[in-house]
Image (tube, rainbow, N blue to C red; front, side):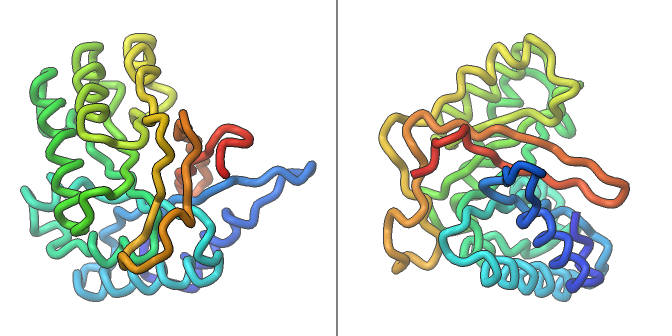
Length: 238
């Protein structure tokens, strides 16, 4: 998780993850930056450093490399604006192909109806705040440890109804059979969907998702970092 106190370190760590190769040459197909640190107390400076880091990463990987932004749910930033007022959702859309909002309904709601509404509001507000009604979103719900089967179903129902391209629950280890039974229902529409960054004049179709694309989540822990990756099945990207 970048803390934005040392951008050289944040950039170095991000690029080390992006450039990682296994002994037999395997690599991750995409990278998502976890944006949730409040270490920099000055909000304007924090946002500026976030955008600076995002611009550096995008410049380093090129325009065709898929980048994701793991962001605080706009429901949280709207309800508790003192945490990160003016969170730069719209500006981030210049650098990232897909947004992964941490829509942890279990923090503030209880029950299936509330889980559905929280997820719905997360998706709708994120598209409003980015000024992009077609923004590709992978919804992260949970926490799974505090989610029952009815809430997991409601989460997935909202994901499917409001056109998220994928979904998962945080986290893998605490997701039970009652959660997976519903997460497995998440499927992307068969029609290919272009992942177009802002501004709108970018050539359509540069980032594409194959039919039946399903975002898989792998969380890699180290002593100082948590990195969340979105990994398409082998051969899925065109």
